[in-house]
Length: 426
View 1 (cartoon, one colour):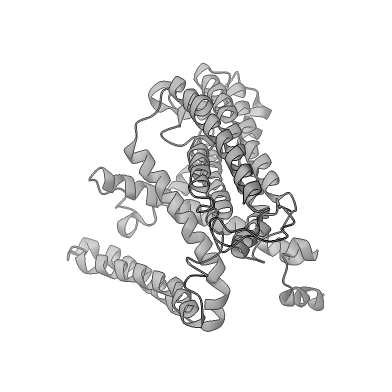
View 2: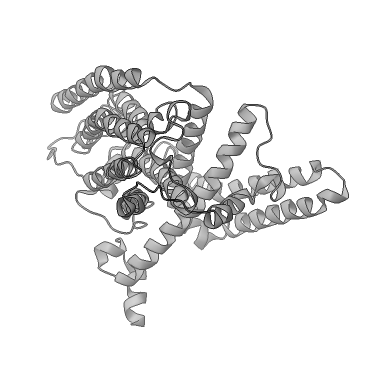
């Protein structure tokens, strides 16, 4: 048994490919735990960022600067009364949030945080991710129908129509990126002699194709890669029902949309599934167009010196966060009521600083590189979600459908055709 566990450590493939059930289970638990913690952090960051956008403070009472607010929210939701409408289909009502949650987390089976930092690698990885992510709408429709209420039903129907509208354009954009994997020339418009023209649907191989071609697909056949990425970036906001495309849960029209009748733990599952789906589709975008786990400028700024410089970024990031925490400690009001708050924020800063120091240790520093750059790119998308919500008003439903069918879909088809032509001509 010990040999079975240790044998994988010298492997250069994912646990799923190696057939190692133990390490696959460990990876699943790590991913589930990390995503759950990321959702809690995202919830706090969104509330604080939106508050600063609107010149407010956001959560401040529970813990220093409200850092413990997500934990307080979790306790509240777990202890809150769970209500099921008398006319609801109880079984469907109960299982709907579980379908959304399972669909969101199942996607992470093939998300490549690094060359070997994935649960497994499928030769149809991108199709698996898109197919499973699409199943979340089934949970939305079931929740709206089972609630036996008008507002949830309207929200559920909106969600199904919205998904159909945007997934077609999203699929076309994805195919454009997959076409680029069949090319082997270097740079934006590079051509490779005796190219086999073989593409891939494997998530890991898609990143390796960008590594081989010395260019992120965001820049490939510029501006075609950029336009395809833009289409996907817009479609993924609609796919996750986020502002300004949050019509299925438009509080000004439908109270809370498809989950109006949900409360307590079941409502929290919807929220957890939504944020997990946001991270998942952001991971797809990073993998397809932004080089996945690759650091910035891996070929332009190559060599041992630059590798060392970029390897310091994870540690410096946590040291920087620790410095921000200590600045907050210094600025904290000097009042007896704030002693616990000040001590808590100082302790949080010390913890961040210790993590930063650990990340400077060479074995840890080298091992964490891939995950750090992947997570940093995903974090940019998560911030953009918040920025969109604070900036743009909600679209009307007819405007939403018009953008999907009359704007994004024709552009996506055009980009796909032009990408194919460029691949043949070059």
